[in-house]
Image (cartoon, rainbow over all chains, first blue to last red; front, side, top):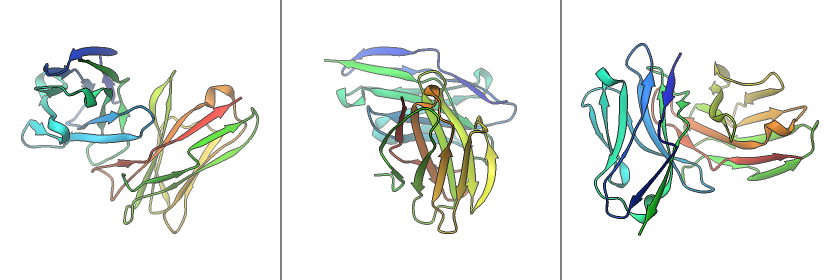
Length: 113
Length: 112
């Protein structure tokens, strides 16, 4: 069965600093991997996805993620965080060809001035 | 705006009652997914419909059921409600399985 682990429940960074949010997955084959962002009171917005090919994926809002099969990881990165990036971030996995997502527990990002 | 519409936005009801949550997918999307977000369980996949037929089932309780109608809108029915059913219920849609899913804003259900 698929599972996703986000080891960091809460991360605080200063505005302008770099960011890395960790995500590890468990799945037998190569999964579909996603990062979603949820702002307070809002739905989920897709930041980026990995299906196959280039392991470095570019997303919206300046985010990128790198798929590392050997580490079963799909960490999200941003070189310079903006105050508006404060939100909850969810990593998710889906079986190849499917779209029913299995989510991690989320990482809450706080950005301080 | 994702194009996925969920109604109502908020719902307060008593234990033991039955409610229906509604989802209108994006135009052209055949797949609808339901998710539950609660403090205890996090974000959980409940069920998927594709063009009117159930396609995949997740951690959906027997008290819960869903359907997708010919116009592709979907309804999630929650019955014999318990306090623990209080959660944010999301609907998502995609063109086909295996692709980009767009989420609605959710329906916040409070059971008192």
